[in-house]
Length: 267
Ligand SMILES: [Zn+2]
Ligand SMILES: [Zn+2]
Picture 1: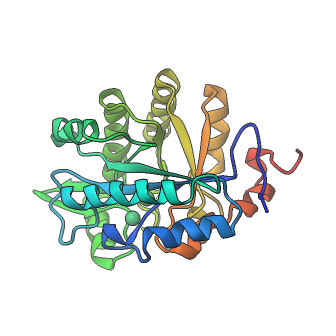
Picture 2 (picture 1 turned 90 degrees about the vertical axis):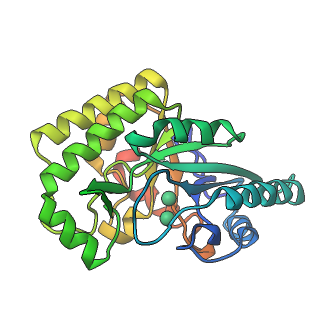
């Protein structure tokens, strides 16, 4: 069964799915495709992690050789499931302003079904801290730096990165520090979010509604206030589950119907 399609947001496409190639997800790519078919989706876009210049204790992204494999397998699956579901190879580009030329070179190497921009890592004293991690060590180090400072740089970097890179969508905009305690946005952060949305509108970059947020805080990323702001800029929404296991493809898409901000319930 096709869940539902809407002119504002296409709920028959999951545009943010990982694979076991990123070292922190499980399941072969074909299992994700089969899961998407079971959910009645008409499209699945893999959005695997690319990072450049990140100094972190583990690699949570693909190597150059793994990206080659990834593209090959995507092409095979697109052919095999042609007529039943569209399968695309995209990339979730991790922002690192110090490595922009490496990022640009990498993006130019392949054809992408979608380029998503996100920023997972905060550089501090030559090392990186994962801002989206639930590991106590990351949470402790982010608190030591100061949440305000981390968020200011996070939003500012996204704003600058959007000016530098050609991307299709900004992923989980307000997911940074999602597992940290006592996080609040200051006026400066809200101002930066507005600047980001304005730049996205100028460059016709979509905003991702990321349903992994339902499991973390009962609503998708980004939160309702940002989605409301987004309407003023006329941005397009695209939907992604951020699945890291096959069973999570299209997760909580049905819950968007009763999430008032998208107005899906009335249609
Ligand atoms: Zn991931
Ligand atoms: Zn992701």
